[in-house]
Image (cartoon, rainbow over all chains, first blue to last red; front, side, top):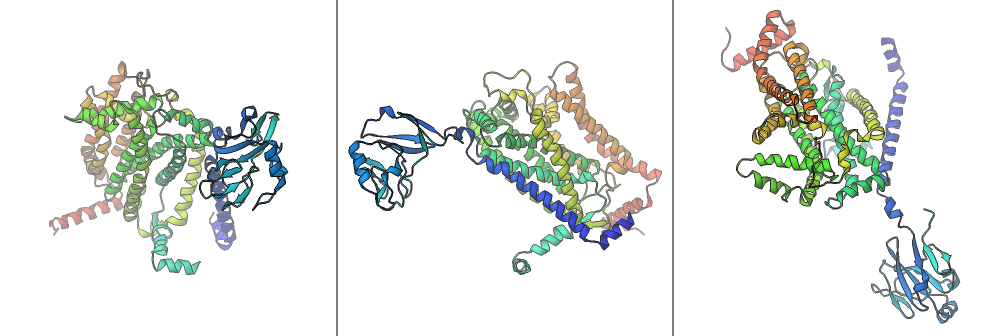
Length: 174
Length: 413
């Protein structure tokens, strides 16, 4: 026993190894223990279950728009008339140019998140698009920013047509 | 790095503090594993505070929502089941650790001079812990939560003259209700921070009088070793063993410490057929029930906790330390331990038949042991000295007697 202790003193790297190994295991354990606590602050199961919204399009007449809730955010669904589609096809938007074709899946239906890309207010519906009441950003009927402080077009949420008159907003692969 | 430390040292005694309280802090070399339970209690306190803060992020302190919000934590919150079971198991673990810590203090006489303030602050910590645990138990708003709180708040009816008003004031309602739940939540969140402050006091006192040790005699300097690394690593080893046992319960048997009735939402119109407090309150509950009178029972129960405070004065023996070298004291300790176990058993059972008498006898024994201690310790000292103590101990005692005589002016010729 005494002999062994002596060799430890002579060979301190053995102690270093033990100290490092103990510290590494304890450190890994501590980091691992943080995981459940960090995860517990992420959206809970009942919140995730509200991650998609199904919308019946049948009730929206041409030229009308409807606001639905998706993940606690407003989503504008605009049933565009042929005239509106033609107008939008003719322009390329403003500050954040993009063709109208890329803004929609089906030309009649525009689906955008109804939060101004400036600071997140809900723009109000106008004949020619939307106007944000907070700082006056103006969007057209393709949800593209025309003027005002907002940097980008209204965001396109992920959605898919379940049938001709029904869409599912959100990614159903959670 | 060294520059940074030097910068801090000019403004804050960092290096000095680490040296004095850690790397050069003298600790008796002969401490057994029973001296691990203080640091273990600190570990459990930290676990309870952390899990509690994360639970509070999802819990709703509202009589209509509380029960469901706990189920929400169990089912919907990511790892909510783990955090809640850690917290509920942690409550029991806290009491196990604290009771062992106290038993060690009793057995080895660590409460004796000069550690009275450690003993009393520890006792204050126990009472704070009990209050915190009691208020936390109401929060799940199950049947046991509700009726436990109803019964315990009713104890304050024993307050002379204004009993009924005090109870209503405590509850903020005519029975335990939404107001009670919300205030219990607020205080359950506050108390741990008071506990942390009291632990600070406990630690300052400890580092002044230093740890006791199994021999009961203050060791000479050469028999002390620095706290770090010897006792840091020993404490960490204790943490490892504790965590293994703790997580066996958390993962495999989390409902061992939860009454099944508490999964029934609180119903103010119906008391569960068999109502019991949490296991850690059982001995005191048995003492409460042993006295067939509200006021007397409450007084006896309060006394059963407070009476520990006078122990340093009840033990009249001049022989240092506790049970290790004092056979009579050891016998008292063993009888007391058995008595507490008997009381726990009686407290867990319905108050019927012979058990009532057993509870009363055990209650009598509980107080009789305290009362008998002065006479027994004096007799024990005489008996042991007659039979011959080890010369070192005898020397120690005579030295102390001489010193006291000098102080009192009875100089020896």
